[in-house]
Image (cartoon, rainbow, N blue to C red; front, side):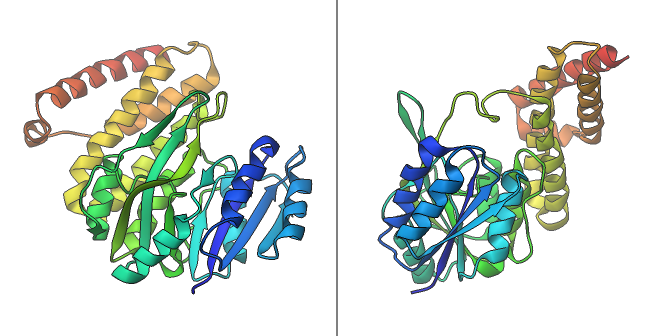
Amino acid sequence: MDLISVIVPIYNVEQYLNQCLQSICSQSYKNLEIILVDDGSSDRCPELCDVWAEKDSRIRVIHKQNGGLSDARNAGMVCAKGEYIAFVDSDDWIEKDLYQKLWSELHQNNAQIAACGIVKVFETTSEEQKIYSKQKIFTNEEALQTLLKGQDFCAVAWNKLYKRDVIEDIRFPVGRLHEDEFFTYRVIANASKLVLVPEAKYYYRQRAGSIMDKWTIRHLDSLDAFNERMHFLQAHYPDLYDMDKFNFYLACVYNGRELATRAEDDMTTEQGITKVLKYSRMISFSIGDFVKLGFKKAIFIVRGRILFWRLSRLKN
């Protein structure tokens, strides 16, 4: 059986860490290399990592200075020896047969990436994210199309198993939010065949007060990611470019609305408005685009232009 390297970036999650690591160590697929990257935690996580390493010889622990989620994942990737790579966030957990299922599907179908469904876990309820497609085997272009729709092969890095060669030298952007948006589409593009497992086997914890739980100026990193992706698709997948152009516009509108509620004299807000306006001006829609997008999206685009005009007035 092939070695799977499971990379777990860890930072100040001591109340969740044992559940996460227990779910990994209990996998029915046994040939695992479990890389715990303690990213300068100030709670008991460093101690817990070492305790788990003593209990399970498959665990390797990296203690490092805090550099953020991307830096921790990258550190794990440098050390990984497996033929396959997987990621688990340290406040989440996984089904016992996750890697057995994903690995088996990859081998049976001669594919390079396998993805499963997700269960979003809130404090009082759980919500299964639907698998929209009845299709099982995908080309990279078909998988990218589902990513742009936020379905099936969505942009998150952690509900997937990757053959090592599709990742090659791709790394997560250090110091940026929305790091998966920079990473996943490039990895998918490197695969020739992908397989979708419809069962939801990854449990994604929704933590109140987390950095992704509320909007901050750092969320504008998503616009940089969308800009890079749009130009990548324009060069390599022109049929997907028009679809992603609207997604990029949608992100500009969303972030523009958030900025419109901020204080006018805030320098950071002004810089944010400058970025939104710069990107929004890069996106143009022809009459043909309006016809393809339909009436509702065309009205949305017009309303977005009004919003951007208001933002330009705030900036001035």
